Image (cartoon, rainbow, N blue to C red; front, top):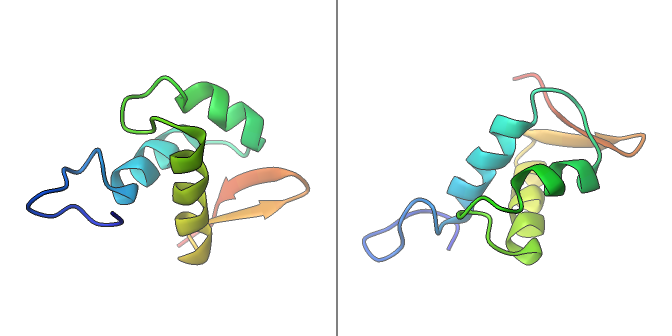
Length: 75
């Protein structure tokens, strides 16, 4: 479910959802603001998948939360 495979396409994997979120995170924003931008995207689907993808990005150090804003971390 995290990575695409033979039976799971890229847009169904959390990695694909994470890519959609990163595209929208050009500037720091709130969770609600980000959700409103991506909720109609087919890959995101549900709020649960949105949160799982955000968790994955945070655990891997790609995004951080500070003062209520989600931002990309510099790599």
